[in-house]
Length: 488
Image 1 (cartoon, rainbow, N blue to C red):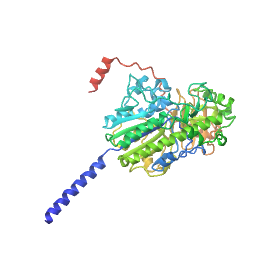
Image 2: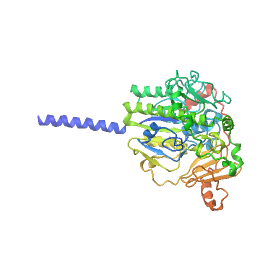
Image 3: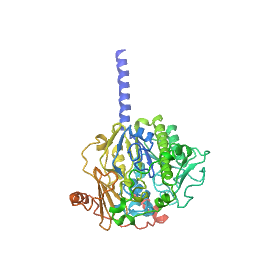
Image 4: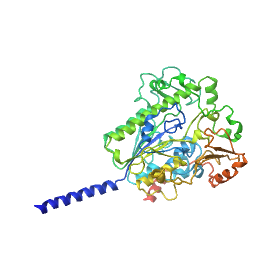
C-alpha cells in the first residue's frame, strides 16, 4: 500500500515538475500599445499639471516608466519605421513620411518587428495605427501580420461617422488642423479609437488567442484633428485652461535660422489670430483623456484575461507635440516637446512595480528589448537600439549612452541625462542644460564654458549620413516568386 502511495506521489510530482518546466519555458505574450502625437502632458511625465491620465499612471505603477525617453524622428512615418525596423533614419535615409518602409530599399529589406515575431513562432495580430498607413495597401497587405483589423489593407477605422455639436473652429481651414466635440449621439464606442480598443479587448477577453502572441493596438488620438465625445471636453472647462508653461514670446531670438527650414506650419499663427489657443489646448487635453480611458480598458481586459500573468506590456507614443512652445503647433522639430515620449514597460519577473528611470533611452530600443525579454535571437547586424533590460532590473544602473533624434539629412538632436545638443546640416548649434533650463529657453551653444560638453556630445553623432532613400520600385510578380524560392 505504501509503495502504491509513493508511486502515485512520485508520478504527481513528476507531472507538476513537468508543468512548471513548461510554464518556465513558455514564451511571454506581448501587448504593444501605440499612441499618436502624445507628448509629455501626462500624469507620468508631468509636462502639464492640467493633464488627467489616471489609467496611464496606474499602468506605470505596475512597471517602469522611462522619463527621459525620446523618438528616433519627430514625424509619424520615420519614427514608426525606426521602431519597426530597429534602424536609425540616418542609416536608412528615411526622413519624411512619404519615404517610409515600402518606398525605402533599406527598410524594405529589413526584418520588421511583426515579421520577427512571426518567424519566432508568435501569432501576430493588430488594429489601428501601428505603422504609418503605407504598410496597409494592396502592395504590402500588412506584411508580418497574421490578422489585422479592420483589414490588411486598412489600418484605421473610418472617421466618417462622427458628427459634431457645432461648426468646427477653423472650418477645415487646413487639413487635419481642427478639433471639436462630437455630437451627443456619438459615444466612445463609435469613435475610431474606441472601435480599435474594443477589438483589442474582445480578442483578449475571448481567451482564444494562439500563444505566444503579439497583439498591437494603435490609437490615433491625440493626433489632429482632435475629435472626442463631449464628456471629455467637459472635463476641462475652457475658463480653467492655461497656456503652456514652456511658452516664451521671444524664445526664438537665440535659435539658429536653420530651424525654420524644417517642416513648419502656420497653425499656431492662425490659432492665435482667431483667439483659439485655449480651445485648441482644451481639445488636446480632452483627446488625451479619452486615450487614457482606452488605455485603461485595454489593460483592464488583459488583467481579466487568461494571459495576464504571462504578457509583456509596452506602451509608447511615436513622438511629442508642441502646443505653442518655440512658436510651433505640431511636431517636426528637435526640441524637447517634440522628441520626448511616453515609454512604459510591464515585464513579469523583470520590471519592479512603480519604478522610473532618468537614463536617456529611445523608441529604437523597443525592438532589441522585446527580443531580449522573449529570448528570441535578434536579426544580425540590423538593430541599432539598446537592450533596456539592465535598466528594467536596476533603473539607476550605470548608463553611459545618449539618445539620438534625427530630422532631415544631417539634422540631429542628442539628449543626455542633463543636456540637449542640436546640430543642423549647416553647422549651427543649440545646447540646453535641463538641470536649470527645463523649457530650453537659453541656448548655450556659443558659451565657451560649454565647449567641452559640445565636444563630447559631438562624438556621439552618426558618422554615416544616408541621403534620402531612393524611391523603392517593387519587383514584378515573377521576381517576387523567385525571391521567395531563393529564401527557401
